[in-house]
Length: 117
Image 1 (tube, helix red, strand yellow):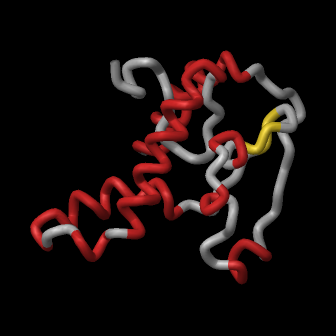
Image 2 (image 1 turned 90 degrees about the vertical axis):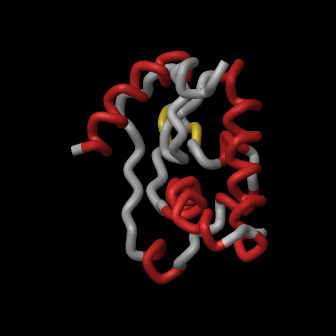
């Protein structure tokens, strides 16, 4: 089983089905740990590490049905904006028609397409 095969979007701004949430949370905890220890990795892995950690660089937040996709993971470090000046200038919009968390798998396909274009 991989998270992607199970339909889990490995982005901070996409909801995760409740039954798979512990796995997505563990994945992001691992990424946070790698980010903290980044200097300990060999230089030849620098590009791969940067690619893995790129999902942590977004300040994009979606709240759907009262659920904050970052808060859903339960990782305090991911709740704090990396750049408060930029974060203070962003606007927040709540989805008017909230979809159930169980439909997060369908939203993955849409978000994946949007990111590839």
